[in-house]
Length: 323
Image 1 (tube, rainbow, N blue to C red):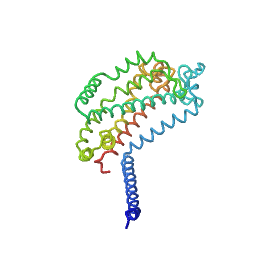
Image 2: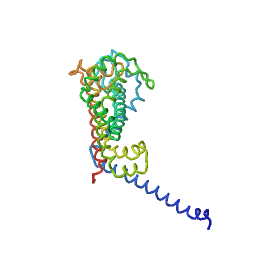
Image 3: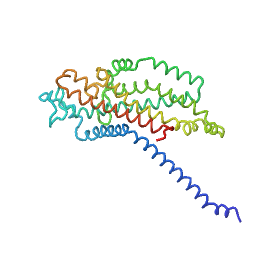
Image 4: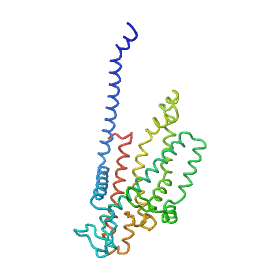
C-alpha cells in the first residue's frame, strides 16, 4: 500500500480524534461556566448586587434617551427648590434644574470615572506585577520600591492637590458630544496610576508561586518563549484575584470620587456627578432633603452592589470551593 493510501486511510480517524478533542474542550468550558454560575448564584447577596447594578446601569442608559444633557443643565429660577412632584420626580435644585435628569448624567460621569480608572489600575498593576514576579532581580526591586513610595502618600491628599492645581485649569473635553470638565480626566489618571500598588503586589506573589509549578517548568523546558509562557500559562491562572480586586476597586473609586467632589475639588460644574450634587445640597441640607437623598442613595446602592458582586466572584472563582 502506498504512502498516500495510508494517509488517506488514517485521515477520517485523525479528523474524528480532532473533532472529539474540540468537543471535549467545549464541554469542559461549558462545565466550567456552569460551575462558576452555580457558585455565583448560590451567593444570594451577589445575585442581589448584580440585579441592583443592572438596574442602575439601565436607569442611566434609558434616562439618557428620555432627557437630554441640555435639559439636565437648563436653568429655570422660577422652579428652584421645588419638592418632588409629577413634573420633577426628584425635585429641582437651587437654580431650577431637574434633579432626576442630573442624577442620570451625573451617574454617567461617576461610573465612567470608576470603570476607566479601575481599568487603568488593573492594566498597570497586572503588568508590573507580572514583570516583577517573573523576572525578579533589579526590575522587581525598582517596581516594589516605587510601589512602597506611592503607598506612603495619602491618596485623598494627592488627589485633592492635583485636582486643585491641575484639574481646574484644564479645558473642557468633548467626549461623544458631551462637554466634560478637564477635572474628570485628571481624576481618572490620578486614580488609575496611584492605586495599582496593591494589585501589583498580589499578582507578583501569585507569579512567584506559579513560575515554580510543574506545568510552567515543563513549558520552559520545551523552549516556550517568556511572553508566550506568561500570557498562556501564568496570567490565566492569576486572573481570579485580579477580577475580584477589579470589582471591589470600583466601589472604592466611587467613594473617593464622591469625597473629592463633595469637597468641591473633584468634577467641576457644569459637569454633574453624584458627589458634586451632594456638595451643592449643603446650602439646604435640612430643608431640601431630596437634593442629597437621591444621589446619595445611588452612591450607596452602587457601592453595595459592587461589593456584593466582588464577594460573589471571590467565592465563585475559589478553586477550593466545594459548592
